[in-house]
Image 1 (spheres, rainbow over the protein chains, first blue to last red):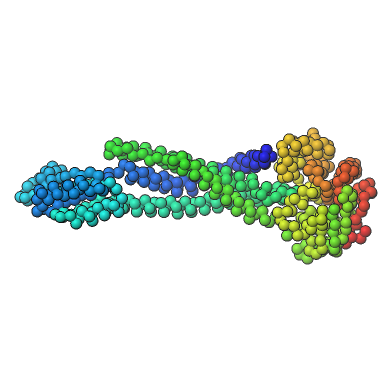
Image 2 (image 1 turned 90 degrees about the vertical axis):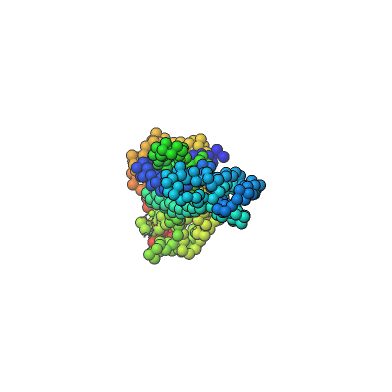
Length: 302
Length: 217
Ligand SMILES: Nc1ncnc2c1ncn2[C@@H]1O[C@H](COP(=O)(O)OP(=O)(O)OP(=O)(O)O)[C@@H](O)[C@H]1O
Ligand SMILES: [Mg+2]
């Protein structure tokens, strides 16, 4: 056990020494991997933020229900009581046609035009908050309300929710595709780096094999190096994203003041950061493994 | 311990370096293989350690047919040997100490045990004072002795030495001969390939003479 630890400690020290031996090349490699990872990472971070925003801070999508113009006060009361009894309805607000007209006059500045109309062209209406705000639930409510007597028109605010959903789905797809492409880039970078190292350490590998080193033994320091490279690249990507967010949040705070809302993009959560590190290290390890396994076969006797 | 039967080795390009070679080497023997340059001495040693493989015939080491070993078994075969190469194959960017440590790291010795063995091996060849030196700063004789230290540090049962006295003057060569004899005396099977007649005469070993790939005596 102690011995086993010593073997791995030696490999780890070897990998660090290897990084330090060619500092510029190592830094450039880590930088390339960092930039490659920062791209999907930034996308992902924005995606997560938008998702959070749409979950807890957005105005609740609403259903607006308008009665027919010839509806009587009794019809209105009937609808109101139906709504109040309905199990999917969270809250309702009644807007009488007189109130609606007054609002319109006050807000639109069209008082003269509206005055010239003579009568009140607006119907009585209800604004309804549903308990379940998914697009599908809202649509089934709309279809139900439409069948009620004296209901002229039911309008849904779910269109934007659907659009957001679609946008988020597209975003997820983009993150996946970018992630896969750049994961491939990471593997390729480590593959090549390790291949070069094997070429420059030809003599050493040859001697080690001649005096009884197994392939796993020779491969091990390269695997450590690859994993270390991936990990360092992952952390660099994380830092780049952090820098980007910092810049963006500076801008957003100006916007926030303007709209009176608090807009701040959050960086990756702790579990996500951990997964990033593990993922990047694993990819580096994989690239090194592919490279070492492919390039060490040439040393065996024919 | 090592036995060849009807072994032929043809290198890529068609050149036959060994032709129908048969021989037996017993445990604890000291054997010197001589012959002109190009006779096939190095090739013979390489076949023993599975560095090259025979085209026909079989090479047995400790009863194992080395010509058919799986790649993953080769390292464990090679750990039976201490190998001194004609071109040394020292690592020139590592210190004397690290060069001798290499076989122990490969086999997986514990830190303290390994350090002790490295010192013992360096002491044996008289290089204890040069642990930290790089091999290029050593004389030819010292490099040769460093190669010996690396070959015997893990206490192999067979020592294969290819031209151990090349480039050494007579005094150094005599000293090195004594060193090799001392391993033989503690029971190591010592197999030496050389065209150094003086070395062969001094050690008075069993001799195998090669001529253009054939054993002539
Ligand atoms: N890798 C190789 N490819 C092709 N031919 C080779 C190879 N290695 C050795 N030979 C040839 O095989 C023959 C025997 O070589 P070997 O190295 O065994 O000779 P040797 O007896 O050790 O000679 P020396 O005393 O010069 O070291 C030589 O003619 C050499 O040219
Ligand atoms: Mg030779």
